Length: 122
Length: 117
Image (tube, rainbow over all chains, first blue to last red):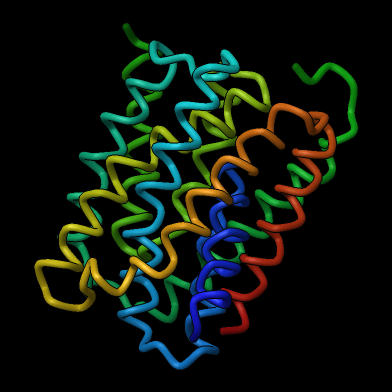
């Protein structure tokens, strides 16, 4: 992967992530296609999210979109959950869990999509 | 007090999912934050803030386990920084319904990918 390709991959995945849309999938697919190992791809995706998130958060804060009081409980719970999640690690069959989570995600996505153009959204 | 605990519980679920799958927690964070009372754009922006410490933790683990080196990320960095600016600016400009619709479509796609491997 040359510098131009890396820059492009970084640009698009970061732009999607900065909009709070995820973006992780974009970069991971790109890296896997470029021949990176699965572990490298996931690791790079995690590492690159940090500068992306920091830059995005500064701009979002300037635009008045960050509400710390509302975010703190969820963020703290999230950190504790992450530790628990890593610890749970190999306890459940990963393939089954991934499939079940996929169903759940699809349901969440459908709900978002259906509700997108309804009135009353802030 | 009770509602803050409830919000933390949702955050906990998000963290567990992120810890288990390495990703996906963000997808649930946005709807959860909206349930807590944030508007669409605030939820999307806020989800980044919620996911950041979780991601820092996961990234540190990956680096410590030697699965990836920070140096490998450097070629991606300039593009990443520019993309973050572009995305953040675009978030302010895009309309909420379109943001919600785009998000929904992306999540369905991610979900389908996970179901069919």
